[in-house]
Image (cartoon, rainbow, N blue to C red; front, top):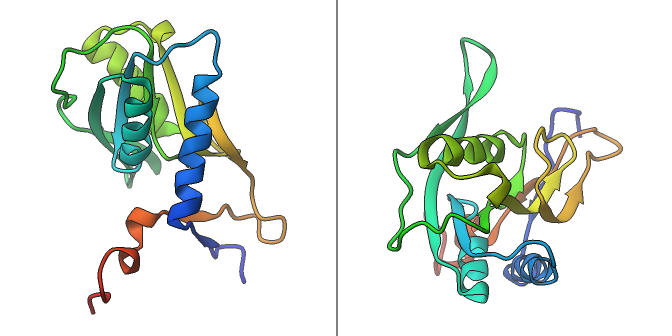
Length: 176
């Protein structure tokens, strides 16, 4: 394996559910933060955010965000949907932004800034949560289940292939 090769880690449905359960438990044990509004970063944050929303009886809003390399500047750029999607008015306190992981951390960092700028939310009322936090990330989430460092041999970080990405778990036979 070369330094540029990425190690893929296929996460089973049971292991994924256990990580989400651990995150919900971590949030439940918090004394200084009460989840009152969940914001899912689509697509990776949808499943954990829905579970957390149901566990805490908190409404869930969704924002679609994606990060892409900007060829001109050679930096990552985050693109957002125009609006949050929600069926209830946005609760302005106890806001938890949920994604599955911090790769570079830019998506979570920019999502928080976007919520403050576009919805006038107080930064003090927003917390972030992920299942996996990579040590190379520029944003450290307030809550995470696993801290992930580079492979000691290759120096590369693993790529987590979640159950949602594994079509063999959902289709009778994979498409060609």
